[in-house]
Length: 198
Image (cartoon, rainbow, N blue to C red; front, side, top):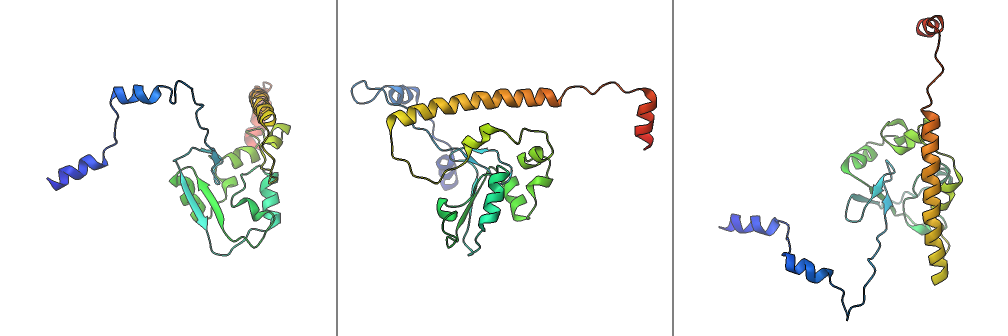
């Protein structure tokens, strides 16, 4: 019986429909609450989105500090900045935090593989010209290590600007893809033979 009891402990708990209905009802006298937003991180290796509660977090604490030149190179190549926010200002901070979306990325990182040489990563796709790499909309995504005093109007305008920048970037990425997929002009048979033989 002990084995059977442990099976039930590991099964996911599903709430009855009545409990779900009570949870969906507004709390505190009918006031609706806004849902909490979570921070979406970027995978250090493949640059895909890491959602809350997913992925692997690797903390390096071996006193190896990345120099400002390598951090600046990552900013130029639009890779996410790992590590604590003070790493830019204080080179004495020895801890780095690497977030990975799945074990595939974590294992490739531990094998010291270069993301720019693996075809399934964003770094390869941008380096090979398959995705838009240089655009002004990417400047808005960069982390700014400057504290800003909370202002409700500033937050509202920032959220509107974020939506607008996302729309512009998606439109430009679609156009980039269409321009990249334009069929090449038809080559004559003799030109194809010279390309094949050469």
